[in-house]
Image (cartoon, rainbow, N blue to C red):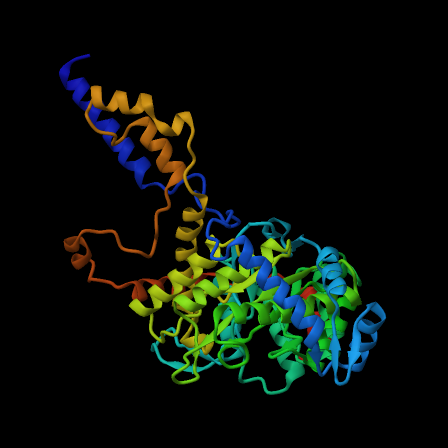
Amino acid sequence: MTSRDKHRARRSGRKERHAQRAAPPKVNPCPPGQIGGQYKPLSDGDLVAIFETALRLLANLGMGETPDKLAHALIKAGAVQAGDRLLLPETLVRSAVATAPSKFTLHGRDPGRSIEVGGQHVHFGTGGAAVQTLDLNNGQYRPSTLQDLCDFTRLQDRLTNISWFTRCCIATDVEDTFQLDVNTAYSLIRHTTKPVATAFTLAEHVSPIVDMLDIAAGDPGAFAQRPFLKAHISPVISPMRYAEDAVDVTFACLKHNIPVSCITAAQAGATAPATLAGFLAQSLAETLASLVMVQVIKPGHPMVFSNWPLVIDLRTGAFAGGGGEIAVLNAASAQLSNWLGLPSGVAASMTDAKALDAQYGVEKAMTSLAAALAGGNLIYESSGMTASLLGASFEAFVLDNEMHAHTYRALRGVEVTPENLGFDAICEAILGEGHFLGGAHTLSAMERDYFYPQIADRDTPKTWEDKGAPDAWSVARKTAQTILAEHHPNYLTPEQDREITARLPIL
């Protein structure tokens, strides 16, 4: 081969290497479901002390305002009436923990989008009941609408790091609660095949919505055989009392085999102790009271143990969604739930920032990474939420989806193998071209081990300036606008849509 031929071969090889580096990875280096549990804010002794305090609270103080139907079931199972409170003995609580499934499948209508909940597997999703939306066009907050909910559902359907979708906003333009519940559920099943979740205002709303889910599933009773929607319920009101309407909803959901996420949302210093340890003990007791309720009504029914520690700013009394306290509390909650062998649900990324700014980035990254490292199975509120859960943002969905990829990559950790240690590759580079660029070992790692962001900017300052100096918010806005312009899924057949519309008040 002549020197000219060798030069051409080198140039051709460089072009191939550049093209390979520019191409997207063939294998996702950081898929959802990575393993957490590396961060343990509580020692083994701490875990025991908190759990034993929770058991004492339930046995000696018990629960107030227990509805008659639930009280009858609990007393039959071993609870003790003490005046106007119902005591839950330790044996009853431990029996519920032992009976509850440690893992279960959260189904998507598309089986390929189902996820396994439990163990130390981490999945980011959504939650919240924002009453305001950060307008995608003018950047101002306004009341959330049913159209916003449809658009949020369409958007996240394309965001692969969001494992499931709970309605993130309330359609404030729908005043009737039955219409609100029906149209919320309809928006979810029409616009995504991921696992979804919603809330029911009243128990009597459950059956007609299940009829709609059966239509989507293909046959009467089909939904109960493979439920692809779970219910978010708050059957316990802090401090230490049951909520009648939510308890009624729980009975109705269990009757129809709807998986439940029973959420405790105490606030430190307001409805629970300000000390972090005392807060964790009371909040654990309250979530255990929900677990006892579910397992007494229907033993073995899947329940996400959603012990969500919330914090208020003790100077003002306002809810604080971001900060070190809420980061460590939710991480500790995940650790406690996983230690008990229960599918854990915690909340993170509930930033207090109104704009997508430095405060937004710090609070979201810190709280979500802590919850993930602690092994929270389902991390709620982690996508799209702003303004202390009062707001939801399309741009935030896009940015948070990319943030989750970085978190999943951090959870994946370092794989130490003879190949990865690279002894031969190091020798070859040092004795050869003196660098690792373009080497087979490097290209293999590039395909397998690295995540390449689409929103975050890695250009030089000059290149960035030549592009108009875009910030992350503007890039995320364009991305969201493009998805919403192009992605108009309808996962219901025309026949299913006509049958649902004929039966229910679809707006």
